[in-house]
Image (cartoon, rainbow over all chains, first blue to last red; front, top):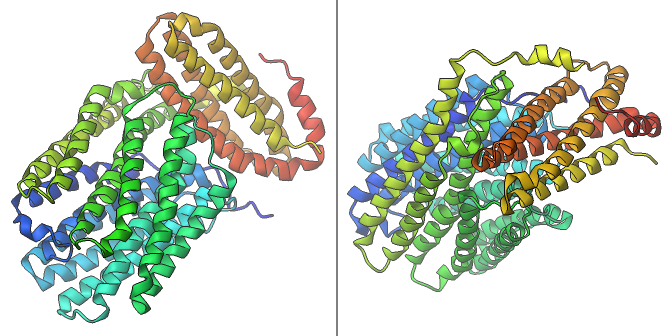
Length: 431
Length: 147
């Protein structure tokens, strides 16, 4: 076996993932403001231009930002490889993505062709620069765990959905909405949510639930089988919705069934966890699992219900599941990275993770997040609730940003001090 | 057949068990109650580090010629973990629960990501390069005297 490509490299610089992480809540705030200022009648339809623009502030501005930041951080730890030119790629991808999302919102909102083309360029450069760097890093992997395989699958889905997304934007700019447009748009959204975000979260959960909460590990069978079956479901669903639309619901049931299994596994594992501590991140995981379970049960039924109910499914899966997992994990990842980078450069006297993120502030933020979800769902019966929901979301995202910045600020402040000692000297003493 | 990978992986799990027990005891009573289980955990972890640093890493480095590679990084992380354990001991002496659980939080993640790198990469490499000497290496690891 060849080990030349293998190295246990140190994590990327803190700035590489952090710039992605701290951008996410800002897009959450922008999305909340747009919801507040938009006529709510336009938001009830998933196909309105306003809905599409706002959806992408969430999916690119928040979800993709967090996932791309996390992938950079996880690849060295979980797979032993790191991105080529990590800091440069991160900076380039981040800025082009940010501009791309802005241009996309402006272009769609104003129906301005030039902005839509600029958006396609920005998003294309932003996604592909980092995805290609990730794929190049993945080519060096020599040990394949279920998590690593899940990460590779998710990245493959990401690649395809970005291609489809760029095609859809191009069609918008050209005013050329063909027969296939809706089918492609459906594939784009379902693959993005379940293929990219869903599979990545499942794969990461295999590792982080045992790691953060000392839960029992997932069973081998589960690790090896769930993701291929979800991939099968996603492919079957896509083919059937193109050629045999009446069977598409079967694909939805298959996908839904395995995500439901995952949701119950989260609850079961957390119940069996051996760490006695309950913190806000446990609440976030529970909320995520419950929302996911409700969401995937409702999703196949939308064929039989009013079409607008799909928006409830999006709130449950997008806000209740994906956003909750990410929000909770940011509360672990950021303070840990701050500690890790400071400690690795010789600082000993560092606040603990609990001192960096104040539990009380995090709990208030969780409460706001939960309320905003409830308000968004209530909107389907009580139209005025959308305004309350948007305001609550805004405050929740603002508080999340403040909490994360407080933690990151410790890095900036402590880094100005002289290190307590140089690690290398101490290494000599050990020998 | 003796297997370096499972020998050291099992030792990780034993340390994890002690860690979980320490947190359990500390969360139920005072930190003073957890002092003895903390000491057992810290000793077992130090023993594990030294099995690697005194026996396995040098064998690995000699065989592969990779002196500045993964083993060096693992030594570095051992130092980070040692500093956390020392601070946990101080938090126990000061009966500072918030500090203690803040440290165990950090320790848990640091330890688990360290274990993951070892179990999923370094130990697999070690087992492949050192397979024929595995029995001797395990015996040497079992018989070290901890400084």
